[in-house]
Image 1 (cartoon, rainbow, N blue to C red):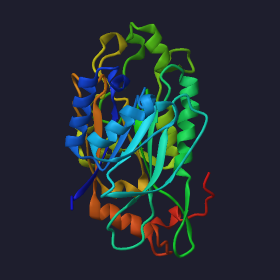
Image 2 (image 1 turned 90 degrees about the vertical axis):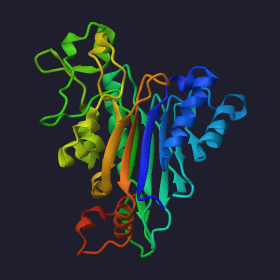
Image 3 (image 1 turned 90 degrees about the horizontal axis):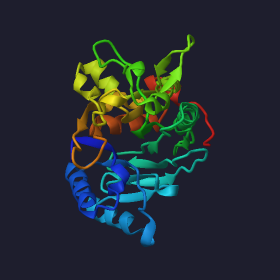
Length: 312
């Protein structure tokens, strides 16, 4: 049994754009990384021709998979590590997320599932993206009834392409200088008007996720372990768009952070215009957190999470 449970998010450009050789290489590379959960974006055409590419992806990856409505996103899970317990459908998106509850196997007792979400926020409208980012918080409000009859909120791990930025930390990379962008369309897409009329980088979704109880995984590793490499850029450099920045990653419910051991950016040069991001969770610590969450008691530190909540 592996000591870590690895989540990977990957925006594979245009799902290969019809280049079957590149598609094959990308999926073989992702399979070689052996993720427990894979969040994919830009799944275009996956369901065409009776789902040809969707079926091939499952075969190459060796994982169970679900492609969301509109082939915008997909979610894959290693069936030897996770059991899928239910799907979470949602509405109000330009690019539909894919979300399932996944229960960790072989934990030695009842555990609560994790809500795993693959998402791709809209690229062109900060206003629409703000609404979609706020919709993401609904995945932090899913309820679960334990065998003992308690109703608890489920933890979530959300991986995807945010098309916006995270709040920086001291010693970490600075937000891009929006006013320096020569690509004025991209400038409008990635920024908002500040009180004085100048453009400021869009960090709205990250701030809302923080307020709702989910932390950016890379920022947590950089802050708590000093590994600033976790904050490496996830898109290829485009000087007219401010250079290389990080717009892909994971938000993780704070109750799961004690199990988070590392985050790294995986080079996808030659395969995609986005790099993949991997979040590594210590398996036994994760199992212990999920077991304790299934048996809420007043003397547990996480009791505040065991509040009654109707599943949306």
